[in-house]
Image (spheres, rainbow, N blue to C red):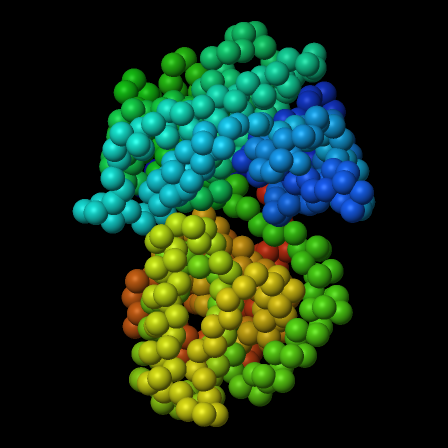
Length: 510
């Protein structure tokens, strides 16, 4: 029988809302992540000024609770201006007040080893099932040096900063650690603090957690260090139920002396219980809608209508990385045009590509591959009046929102994705009753599959067929699916994601 964590998901928010608000009033809140809510830059007078960074929805979710609790956000110093910041309150929103920000300062070599060698690409590639195990990665002496002097060292620095913050306040602490950059920090925190110290450790992992067999490729010392770090937390959050189950299976297979309980969603290790739950992350619906109503988005909307208005429009918006499966998406469009010539000269495929980690060779190569795949389709079917695939490279969020307003089909065919928030942003702003074609390997599938056409991402024929079905779908069915997606997304937005974590802490008595 397949183990399940369904009965241990978070309780209804209305029932528990007052409980977690009361809990926060009696605790200090500490957030730890590689990227913080702000970065600093010098203004025209040479003064350090904060600028909201790419913390995204996490910052938005936390901004509401800063009104109830004194929160401190600990992050890596990413610039000289960050390093010069002495710590203090920083505004994070026009309506939300301020949050205390402290930066962890590491030397450049340590940070590069931690971030550019171990976290990216080693762990990120592993967790997205992107290793070519017959050729890479090569774990050699240099890798081990970057593990010890980079990843381990920076995680220790974070643990020291968190521990220091815990001890400056007599109130119990709630520590919310984010993502794969800080897997070791919980172990170091728990090892330093006195057993009677009052604190709760939570860790949320934003990317997929693959099966135990994938973790078997990582050297035992690295693997055990990661698992020991995560088993030092009280509550471990994942995007999906399957991710949580995979973590428990990984502990069962690779962590000696760990006792696992699938039914209760718990790992018992070194006389400590770690509860495993799924908390699918979402988007800030209100903020997205405000942006969609701006004049800047309206201008892009008008421009895109002039270019593509009147023709069915397939849209995809992705970072340029192999896990997004962009090449196979273009090949599926090729098969669609081959099998259904009635779409030739009519359907436009608009691909908005955002550069990502271009210093990594694999990403540079993938950009060349996807441009080549698009070029082949255009050469095969296009003419002077019709370019089947238009690829636009560059980061421009207002333009992306305008494209999402206009799609008839939104293609999300990732091979592996922690969530994929484009799949949630699109249905919220779309004005065409557009159809979502969604990979079964995205975290978003768990919530959205009832309103989407779900595909196996490596099956080009299935993807081509889904694109065709989406294009010819009757209006009533398109409208019903679009409304269902909107209701699902609006009912569980980014604030709900945070609330459910806090409610679970209350429910478990942590």
